[in-house]
Length: 89
Image 1: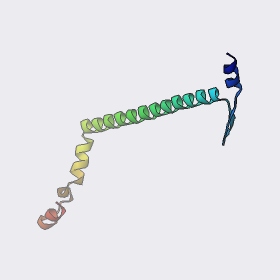
Image 2: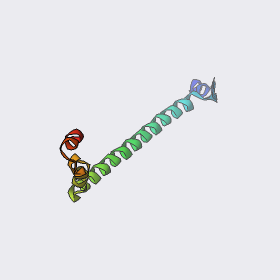
Image 3: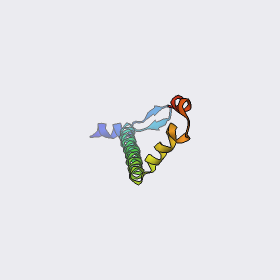
Image 4: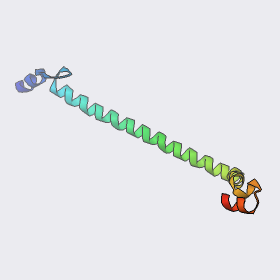
């Protein structure tokens, strides 16, 4: 048990400062868990944004807004005559 006490009291000095090896390992584990939490949160937010965007597209398709936009963007909506209509197509 004495060697464990010595191990706990030993310090490791690096570029950031001196830390105990056990605490350094716990810090790294906590840091990895925190990184996983952040990645999970970002993935969840991105998934919710995709679902909301798809729901909005579905809603605008049901309301006819997409059909109106497609009709407005069509070349024949400009009431062009023969060659102009063909060129725009």
